[in-house]
Amino acid sequence: MNKLFIATRKSPLAMWQAEFVKAQLKQQHPQLAIELIGMSTQGDVLLDVPLAKIGGKGLFIKELEEQMLAGNAQLAVHSMKDLPVVLPEGFAIGAVMARHNPLDAFVSNTYASLDELPQGAIVGTSSLRRKSQLLAVRPDLQLHDLRGNIHTRMRKLDEGQYDAIILAAAGLERMGLPERIRSIIAAEVCLPAVAQGALAIEVLAKDASTQGFVDCLNDESTLACVRAERAMNAALEGGCQVPIGSYAIWQGEQIWLRGLVASLDGKTIIRGERKGAAADAQAMGEDLARELLANGAKSILDVVYGRA
Image 1 (cartoon, rainbow, N blue to C red):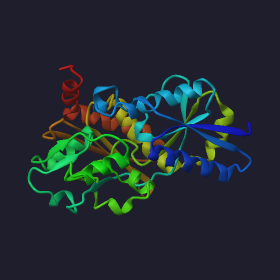
Image 2 (image 1 turned 60 degrees about the vertical axis):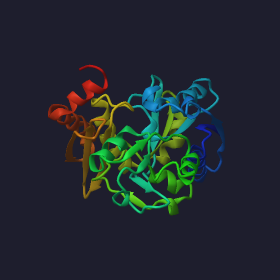
Image 3 (image 1 turned 90 degrees about the vertical axis):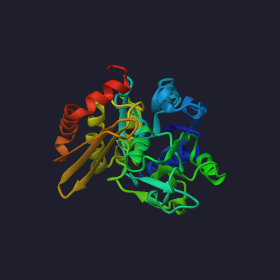
């Protein structure tokens, strides 16, 4: 094989990510010809409905996977936080790249931080995870849905529809807009989404040739952290319908994993943490999930999923 096709969404951020992966691959395999196949997915088209109500972030990847199954592309590039914890049969995560900024960014034309927002300020975000944690510290805020690509969201802010919006810092930095970040929201205030800031390369599980090309992109340190985060999420049966945060970092030779499950109104947040070796990342995440469930997360999940 001397040519690879990369399936990607057409949004500016997704195209940047695919171009970034292309450049990294070309650097390691200069003999390869690499082309991008840009697509609009259901998640990109259905912008007037919160993701939690229309199937979650899996809507961003289905069409890309269909291109791979049809033989039109050998790999797909995703923000790893968009990948379901269980991939469809026949697909695999070929590589997890070194993580960029994993935290959330506060963006405003008027205010410098969350603390500076006046009573009743309008904040834009469609993330239930962000909404619940923001309401926990600022129950006075009006949280309005905000979807679309980064430039669409920024335009709505600039038009005065919101006093502030919350976006992933990594996305703004990748798009060359770091100056729009007024402040970074600490993990202690808003724990990031599972695998936020990491890029994942999806391949067909049986495609050993493509796997051989993408092995060079894998970052073991990031992989261990996101493995712990995704293991916790999987054990909680997490999805877009419930606010779940999970964030692992390295502390010396150990991984420090923090996790939470929150009620939609932010009045109840169940938190926990674990520390352990990279080899224990999977077990550590699963064990933390069991603790969260035992401490009250099960009741929250039962309500959200209609099991109560």
